Length: 267
Image (cartoon, rainbow, N blue to C red):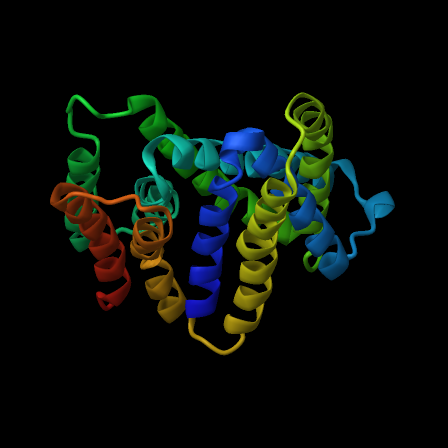
């Protein structure tokens, strides 16, 4: 779990190093290609056997997958790794809190809301477009979870996820060509983009696949809640993106809301 979380955030940090050359769009395009290659190798989808009832959620999942990564990486470019990942994390947290009927979870939702208000408080240096893109990534991640459930119930194994990743890669193929022609990538930029795809897509997917066979789902979800902290630390150490006490407090509130929701006994 530690390796998966660190790999994901280090991959995003390395991808951001290629932004000055090919931009977030170019990095996301390469990441989609890598994700498609990995998932196709694992899932081996039988596309010709898919029915329309299976195809339509797969196509929606492909659009959401691409939009989620593009909005997240653009947010990272504008507001930094720690804040962007924290705002994106509101997606699965919202799904978890919305699905519960416990009164105590209302308190946790209020804690998370306080964290969001702290992060997005008005100040001269606030980049509201970047924050908005982080929230768009959160909405996409929530949609991604719901669509994955639908795809998983209609398509056997990992075939649905693999097909969605393939469609998303095809959508970004012309984008990648345009970026390569207008902004030819240097070897370093190309290497950083590929590393982002491997570390943020391939490694976490395979690591989580093996982890979930050995670790209970609540424990896995609890560790997942630490990802915003990992992102902030990686952004601080690797990219020099320092955060003030208010930002750390906001991140801590959102992480605590998720952790408390998981740790509270369910009757």
